[in-house]
Image (cartoon, rainbow, N blue to C red; front, side, top):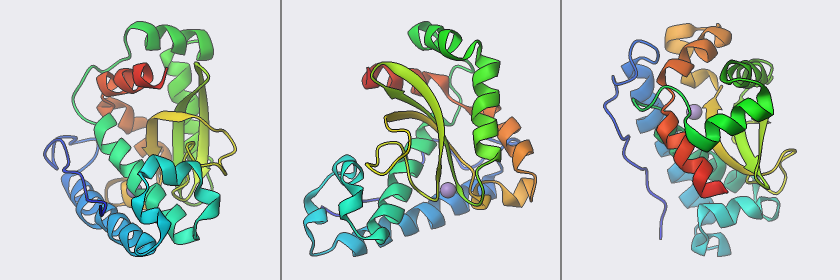
Amino acid sequence: MAHTLPALPYAFDALEPHIDALTMQIHHDKHHQAYVDNLNKAIAGTDGEGKTLEELMANISAYPVAVRNNGGGHYNHSLFWTILGTGSNQPTGDLAKAINETFGSLDDLKEKMSTAGATRFGSGWSWLLVNDGKLYVSSTPNQDNPLMDIAEVKGTPILGIDVWEHAYYLKYQNKRPDYLKAIWNVINWDAVVARYKAAL
Ligand code: MN3
């Protein structure tokens, strides 16, 4: 089964003014579509064709770099669209408790993730992930993610922030820290809480 582009679960302009509609449209319809198309090309006729994205990630060191880049790109963006939107604007329940216990407060977590994203040289992602019931913050280069066997900090990502220039350049230009500040206004914490429960 070929991989397909998931529909954006809200309108392109749903995250205005924090993330502009044109950025969302190009990011989803062009960038994410390209990762899907190039992943399908990279696994065509290989054993990777029968694997789920999660299976590919878990054994990514055994695959060509095109599978790593485009499979990671497909996985990361599929997660990214779902954790943005209009849901609860802060974590609730066990996740809220775990964030306070692990990082001190929600603001401390935001600062830690924003710093991880701002200091990632070049392109990559900032992550909140779960490993063995514990929360961690990490960042990865390019389209790598914590599910990959080559990741420095491994686990199940429950929140990912794209720090590639294509995620913010039209509105924020070179000011990545401004984008990293604004994005917290459009995190859908209901989706992050659901991923946290699923990861435990
Ligand atoms: Mn992107």
